[in-house]
Image (cartoon, rainbow, N blue to C red):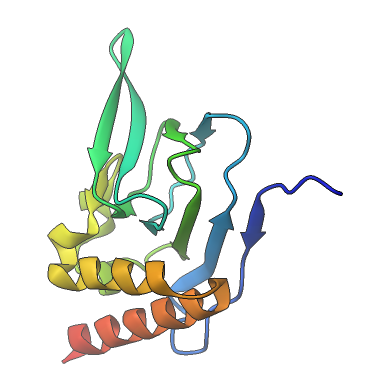
Length: 162
């Protein structure tokens, strides 16, 4: 029997979002290591932890490290430095990787306000973020999660244009 490792899926965005979203992604089955460094990319993502209703993000502070805790749906801003994540606590996650300039119209804030930080999505979207995470957690598979996420972004974008 072949050992099962992490499963990573990256479908392209549908046409209404193609100008804003670079790709959707899903990761299941936590790797064997407990921590991982995320290198800076200068991009914005929305990430949902479907395994736990919490993210633990580790950042260097002075001569040590701090662990910031966030509810299970976050916007991750463009970072200029690496940060760490606890991979086992994030065993099932789904996210949206935005194209440069694409996140502002969906999140409702300029990219600069998200620089070098994580923000609970509920602070930006209210109760809708919590309900979306619940629907994503209940979905049967990554394909269904992507459909739910795509529709939520289309609905959010439509409301922002009204």
